[in-house]
Length: 241
Image (cartoon, rainbow, N blue to C red; front, side):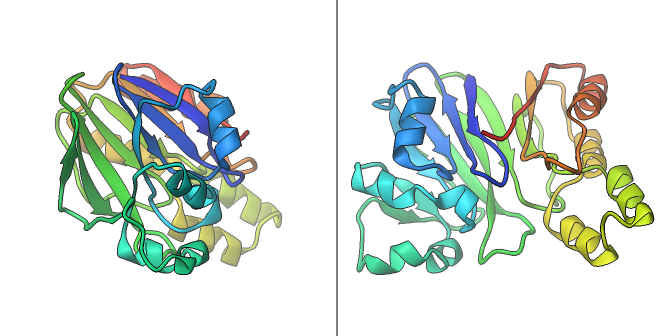
């Protein structure tokens, strides 16, 4: 299973899962020309795009994908909060999905689940690929994950900030208590990710991707070292464009 990060962070999010024959996009927070360039114009194998929620850095390119014939999957709450979609009376390539109701196409099976964020109906995705025999967890823009999983081979998870870093910033007056509260209520911390990893069976884990790191409240080197030490497997850091 090949994982590619085209963009990660407040400027845009877009990731690719590729099993060697077909691929999925996770998020379309880039315009289509940027997605094309990020994939070296190799886009024919894309079977669809899953959008987690309606914030622009995750859905900016949604109309671009629909116009070019790609299937887009998202929750009703997300669709209701994307102004561009209100221009469409209907669209046969826009698919509304429900949490804890799996859908299957080609060799992919995707189980949406709820996450915790200030959005209409945000989702994470548990993804199975029968061709490569991989089980992938994707979760971003959430302040915790309520489920545990077995057999995960790939984990793609937001690791936005360190509690230690924001506590120090509040103490020094660089961040208000209200700002810190908003970060904590909408994003996953390194400490939260570590607790989540400890609660799961990681015996099949092959690699972890840390997503959506804050430009000011994270430490790439430290985050990678801590997670790698815990999992004993390769850790990759995604960066802003």
